[in-house]
Length: 176
Image 1: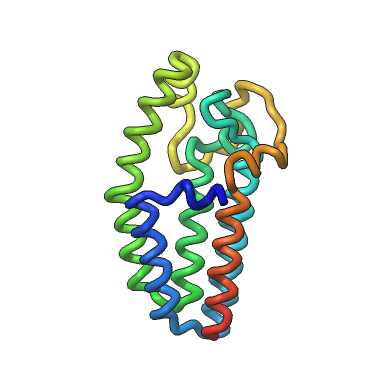
Image 2: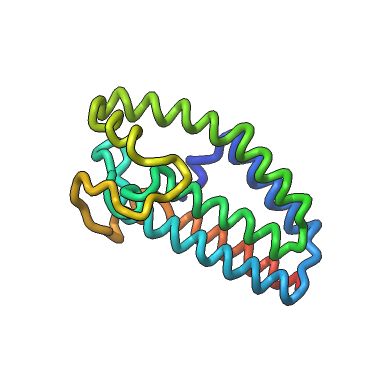
């Protein structure tokens, strides 16, 4: 399975944290429903993004990427917030957001930015100047053309994330 190839030290910590969250969860019907809505919104955003993303092939500056550089991370943040609210575990939310802001964002920014600059040069630099990392702009950047493709969703392994998110919410529902 493709998702097993993506297991790293970093993802092991994420899976362990998710397991601890599920074990410590004390969801209420209300917290579960609110969390489920946020998780659903987050995964919808991730699928929307994955359908445009053509990693290392094209500098994607259209679709959701025309409004914000890291829309997939916004989806991931919504999923994280949703799981923590569903679990009725705000302290996990604080820890997750702290880890995201202090470790994940700086690490990914450094790695992705240098890779994109090497691969796409001036086109990336222009995009980088115009489009914010996390605050969406109302008007699309408007450079480049592309369309959403289901094949891209599979090429970007989003089905594995969707499966894990769905399994996590099913397990969480059993705790309600």
